[in-house]
Amino acid sequence: MDAGGSARVTDLAPQELRILVAVADEGGFSAAAARLGATQSAVSHAVRGVERKLGTVLFERGRFGARPTPAGERAAAHARRVLRMLAVMAAEVRGAQSGRIAGPLRVAAFRSAALHLLPPALERLAARHPDIEVRVGVVRELGAGAAGEVAAGRADLGIATLNGPPPAGLVGAVLLEEPYFLVHPAGHPDPRGLPLVDWAENCGSHTRDWWAAQDWLPAATVSAEDDGAVLAMVGSGFGMAVMPALSLTGAPPSVGITDLGPERPYRGVGYVTTPELAATGAVRALIRALRSLGKPAPGRA
Image (cartoon, rainbow, N blue to C red; front, top):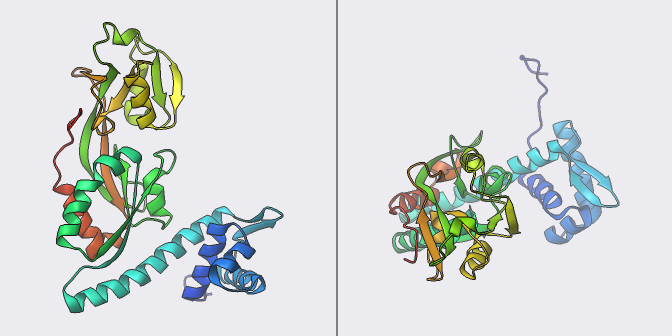
């Protein structure tokens, strides 16, 4: 025990962190061993050693494999972030010598942001920093969403819906406030009388109160997988929808877009990252590129 009465934890080696992450990602010791080119017994022994050092059980073992406990999920997230910073350290040191920003940059974004917000930002990023290698993962903006990918150490920066401060432990800012519109078959005489088409990611806390106050909005007749499917159904005359501006970029002529008036809802779209990654060259460069973009205009641009 130290002077403060807390238990000392023996430092974990990078290889122990890699094993911890592999087991969490693969869901079992055998699959983790195959990924790492090690034996199952070596992986199992290493995990037991990490559990002894941390003083807690990290995985539930069973016929299903190895499932992270809540402590295991937290440990794996920290391990991913530590390993990422080790990799970033090498890239930053090389960049200090060459004067260039280089290396991999992992981005998580919800679908419409990945389709319509990221491409122009990445084009600007590539023009200024061609040695940054960007990998974009599209995630559903449900539950933890893109911010959760950053918190778990699986992404360096997330493009997420933000209607308040970033989640605890992360930093970020709102890039734009996008309004919602009524979307319907073009030329329809009574679009509000049509069935409602919706998708699970649409009605977050930023629209829930507005949605509940609209007597003309019925319960959804169809729930689609994503906003692209909703737009296709509306364009084919199947129904109407309430959708944010990013989702309407490039909408076909068969889709009509009507302003919902001064009380229309908005959602904030912003970036989130970790405090340690916020100071790195690649993340800072992408944030600058994102901030240089104008506001998206709904429609067919």
